[in-house]
Length: 231
Image (cartoon, rainbow, N blue to C red; front, side, top):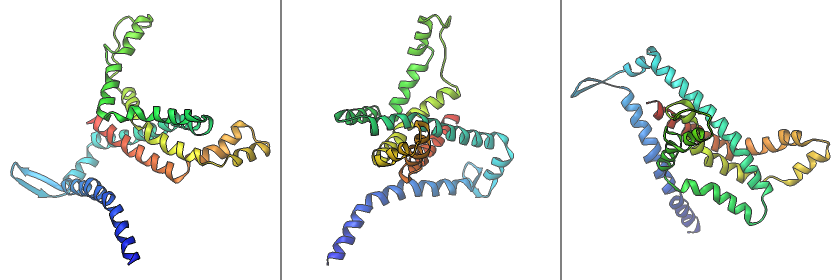
Protein backbone atom coordinates (compact mmCIF):
# COMPACT_ATOMS: atom_id res chain seq x y z
CA UNK A 1 0.00 0.00 0.00
CA UNK A 2 2.75 2.39 0.94
CA UNK A 3 4.69 1.64 -2.26
CA UNK A 4 1.57 2.33 -4.34
CA UNK A 5 1.11 5.69 -2.63
CA UNK A 6 4.77 6.53 -3.22
CA UNK A 7 4.53 5.69 -6.91
CA UNK A 8 1.34 7.74 -7.22
CA UNK A 9 3.02 10.70 -5.52
CA UNK A 10 6.02 10.38 -7.83
CA UNK A 11 3.83 10.36 -10.94
CA UNK A 12 1.85 13.34 -9.68
CA UNK A 13 5.09 15.25 -9.21
CA UNK A 14 6.40 14.24 -12.63
CA UNK A 15 3.17 14.93 -14.53
CA UNK A 16 3.64 18.73 -14.96
CA UNK A 17 7.25 18.23 -16.07
CA UNK A 18 6.33 15.46 -18.49
CA UNK A 19 3.47 17.49 -19.94
CA UNK A 20 5.80 20.46 -20.38
CA UNK A 21 8.45 18.38 -22.13
CA UNK A 22 6.04 16.47 -24.37
CA UNK A 23 3.73 19.33 -25.35
CA UNK A 24 6.23 22.18 -25.60
CA UNK A 25 9.47 20.43 -26.60
CA UNK A 26 9.03 16.99 -28.14
CA UNK A 27 5.85 17.53 -30.17
CA UNK A 28 6.97 20.88 -31.70
CA UNK A 29 10.30 19.34 -32.71
CA UNK A 30 8.55 16.37 -34.30
CA UNK A 31 6.28 18.77 -36.15
CA UNK A 32 9.30 20.72 -37.43
CA UNK A 33 10.91 17.46 -38.54
CA UNK A 34 7.75 16.49 -40.43
CA UNK A 35 7.48 19.89 -42.12
CA UNK A 36 11.14 19.74 -43.17
CA UNK A 37 10.35 16.76 -45.41
CA UNK A 38 7.34 18.42 -47.04
CA UNK A 39 7.59 20.07 -50.46
CA UNK A 40 4.72 22.27 -51.66
CA UNK A 41 3.95 21.51 -55.29
CA UNK A 42 0.98 23.87 -55.50
CA UNK A 43 -1.27 25.83 -53.20
CA UNK A 44 -3.29 22.70 -52.32
CA UNK A 45 -0.74 19.92 -52.95
CA UNK A 46 2.12 18.83 -50.70
CA UNK A 47 4.60 16.07 -51.51
CA UNK A 48 7.32 14.39 -49.47
CA UNK A 49 10.98 14.82 -50.28
CA UNK A 50 14.38 16.09 -49.21
CA UNK A 51 14.36 19.26 -51.30
CA UNK A 52 14.54 21.43 -48.17
CA UNK A 53 17.79 19.75 -47.10
CA UNK A 54 19.20 19.97 -50.63
CA UNK A 55 18.51 23.71 -50.65
CA UNK A 56 20.22 24.06 -47.28
CA UNK A 57 23.47 22.45 -48.43
CA UNK A 58 23.52 23.89 -51.94
CA UNK A 59 22.53 27.49 -51.13
CA UNK A 60 25.36 29.22 -49.31
CA UNK A 61 22.97 31.69 -47.70
CA UNK A 62 21.43 29.00 -45.48
CA UNK A 63 24.53 27.25 -44.20
CA UNK A 64 26.39 30.54 -43.74
CA UNK A 65 23.49 31.77 -41.61
CA UNK A 66 23.61 28.48 -39.69
CA UNK A 67 27.35 28.72 -39.03
CA UNK A 68 27.13 32.41 -38.14
CA UNK A 69 24.31 31.72 -35.70
CA UNK A 70 26.29 28.92 -34.05
CA UNK A 71 29.41 31.07 -33.70
CA UNK A 72 27.42 33.95 -32.24
CA UNK A 73 25.69 31.56 -29.83
CA UNK A 74 29.01 30.18 -28.54
CA UNK A 75 30.52 33.65 -28.26
CA UNK A 76 27.46 34.93 -26.39
CA UNK A 77 27.57 31.99 -23.98
CA UNK A 78 31.27 32.58 -23.27
CA UNK A 79 30.76 36.33 -22.80
CA UNK A 80 27.79 35.70 -20.50
CA UNK A 81 29.97 33.37 -18.39
CA UNK A 82 32.73 35.99 -18.15
CA UNK A 83 30.24 38.59 -16.90
CA UNK A 84 28.20 36.29 -14.66
CA UNK A 85 31.12 34.63 -12.85
CA UNK A 86 32.38 37.72 -10.93
CA UNK A 87 28.81 38.65 -10.02
CA UNK A 88 28.09 35.13 -8.76
CA UNK A 89 31.41 34.99 -6.88
CA UNK A 90 30.70 38.25 -5.06
CA UNK A 91 27.16 37.22 -4.11
CA UNK A 92 28.09 33.68 -3.04
CA UNK A 93 31.45 34.18 -1.32
CA UNK A 94 31.97 37.84 -0.44
CA UNK A 95 28.53 39.19 0.46
CA UNK A 96 27.50 38.63 4.07
CA UNK A 97 24.21 38.66 5.92
CA UNK A 98 21.14 40.16 4.34
CA UNK A 99 23.21 41.83 1.63
CA UNK A 100 23.57 38.45 -0.10
CA UNK A 101 19.81 38.07 -0.41
CA UNK A 102 19.39 41.70 -1.49
CA UNK A 103 22.02 41.38 -4.22
CA UNK A 104 20.56 38.10 -5.45
CA UNK A 105 17.11 39.68 -5.51
CA UNK A 106 18.51 42.67 -7.41
CA UNK A 107 19.68 40.25 -10.11
CA UNK A 108 16.23 38.67 -10.31
CA UNK A 109 14.02 41.77 -10.30
CA UNK A 110 14.72 42.87 -13.92
CA UNK A 111 13.76 39.40 -15.09
CA UNK A 112 10.31 39.64 -13.52
CA UNK A 113 9.37 41.64 -16.61
CA UNK A 114 8.70 39.97 -19.93
CA UNK A 115 11.68 39.25 -22.17
CA UNK A 116 9.96 41.24 -24.90
CA UNK A 117 9.67 44.27 -22.60
CA UNK A 118 13.36 44.03 -21.64
CA UNK A 119 14.36 43.75 -25.29
CA UNK A 120 12.34 46.85 -26.19
CA UNK A 121 14.05 48.62 -23.28
CA UNK A 122 17.43 48.00 -24.88
CA UNK A 123 16.05 49.15 -28.22
CA UNK A 124 15.01 52.43 -26.61
CA UNK A 125 18.50 52.86 -25.14
CA UNK A 126 20.38 52.01 -28.33
CA UNK A 127 18.26 53.70 -30.98
CA UNK A 128 19.25 56.91 -32.72
CA UNK A 129 17.25 59.10 -30.33
CA UNK A 130 18.06 56.91 -27.32
CA UNK A 131 19.88 57.61 -24.08
CA UNK A 132 23.34 56.45 -25.16
CA UNK A 133 23.26 58.53 -28.34
CA UNK A 134 22.17 61.59 -26.33
CA UNK A 135 25.03 61.08 -23.86
CA UNK A 136 27.59 60.83 -26.65
CA UNK A 137 26.28 64.06 -28.16
CA UNK A 138 26.27 65.80 -24.76
CA UNK A 139 29.90 64.77 -24.14
CA UNK A 140 30.88 66.07 -27.54
CA UNK A 141 32.22 62.73 -28.74
CA UNK A 142 29.95 62.69 -31.80
CA UNK A 143 28.49 65.44 -33.95
CA UNK A 144 25.09 63.90 -34.56
CA UNK A 145 22.79 61.06 -33.49
CA UNK A 146 24.32 57.58 -33.53
CA UNK A 147 22.30 54.53 -34.55
CA UNK A 148 23.45 51.58 -32.44
CA UNK A 149 20.77 49.10 -33.49
CA UNK A 150 20.67 46.63 -36.40
CA UNK A 151 24.21 45.29 -35.96
CA UNK A 152 25.94 42.33 -34.36
CA UNK A 153 26.98 44.28 -31.27
CA UNK A 154 23.39 45.19 -30.45
CA UNK A 155 22.30 41.58 -30.96
CA UNK A 156 25.04 40.29 -28.64
CA UNK A 157 24.15 42.87 -25.97
CA UNK A 158 20.53 41.72 -26.00
CA UNK A 159 21.47 38.03 -25.96
CA UNK A 160 23.94 38.44 -23.09
CA UNK A 161 21.50 40.46 -21.02
CA UNK A 162 18.64 38.01 -21.53
CA UNK A 163 20.85 35.01 -20.75
CA UNK A 164 22.65 36.48 -17.76
CA UNK A 165 20.16 35.22 -15.17
CA UNK A 166 20.28 31.65 -16.46
CA UNK A 167 24.06 31.69 -16.12
CA UNK A 168 24.33 33.55 -12.80
CA UNK A 169 21.84 31.53 -10.76
CA UNK A 170 23.56 28.12 -11.21
CA UNK A 171 26.94 29.75 -10.56
CA UNK A 172 25.71 31.35 -7.32
CA UNK A 173 24.29 28.03 -6.14
CA UNK A 174 27.47 26.13 -7.00
CA UNK A 175 29.94 28.64 -5.56
CA UNK A 176 27.88 29.01 -2.39
CA UNK A 177 28.22 25.28 -1.80
CA UNK A 178 31.98 25.18 -2.32
CA UNK A 179 33.95 24.07 0.73
CA UNK A 180 35.98 26.97 2.10
CA UNK A 181 38.66 24.49 3.20
CA UNK A 182 39.54 23.84 -0.45
CA UNK A 183 40.45 27.49 -0.96
CA UNK A 184 42.38 27.63 2.32
CA UNK A 185 44.26 24.44 1.40
CA UNK A 186 45.26 26.02 -1.90
CA UNK A 187 46.76 29.02 -0.11
CA UNK A 188 48.43 26.79 2.52
CA UNK A 189 50.17 24.85 -0.26
CA UNK A 190 51.72 28.04 -1.56
CA UNK A 191 49.27 28.96 -4.28
CA UNK A 192 48.66 32.60 -5.11
CA UNK A 193 45.37 34.25 -5.90
CA UNK A 194 45.65 33.45 -9.59
CA UNK A 195 46.61 29.82 -8.98
CA UNK A 196 43.77 29.22 -6.51
CA UNK A 197 41.30 30.86 -8.85
CA UNK A 198 42.52 28.87 -11.85
CA UNK A 199 43.00 25.49 -10.18
CA UNK A 200 40.19 25.41 -7.59
CA UNK A 201 37.54 28.08 -7.95
CA UNK A 202 37.04 28.07 -11.71
CA UNK A 203 36.93 24.26 -12.11
CA UNK A 204 34.53 23.99 -9.19
CA UNK A 205 32.24 26.76 -10.36
CA UNK A 206 32.40 26.25 -14.12
CA UNK A 207 32.51 22.47 -14.55
CA UNK A 208 29.79 21.39 -12.11
CA UNK A 209 26.81 19.59 -13.72
CA UNK A 210 24.29 22.27 -12.74
CA UNK A 211 26.44 24.93 -14.41
CA UNK A 212 26.80 22.80 -17.52
CA UNK A 213 23.02 22.77 -17.70
CA UNK A 214 23.10 26.55 -17.46
CA UNK A 215 25.59 26.74 -20.35
CA UNK A 216 23.45 24.39 -22.40
CA UNK A 217 20.30 26.39 -21.77
CA UNK A 218 22.08 29.66 -22.43
CA UNK A 219 23.56 28.37 -25.69
CA UNK A 220 20.19 27.07 -26.89
CA UNK A 221 18.49 30.32 -25.96
CA UNK A 222 21.19 32.40 -27.65
CA UNK A 223 21.09 30.23 -30.76
CA UNK A 224 17.30 30.48 -31.01
CA UNK A 225 17.18 34.24 -30.44
CA UNK A 226 20.11 34.87 -32.78
CA UNK A 227 18.46 32.81 -35.49
CA UNK A 228 15.22 34.76 -35.04
CA UNK A 229 17.16 38.03 -35.29
CA UNK A 230 18.75 36.84 -38.53
CA UNK A 231 15.40 35.97 -40.05
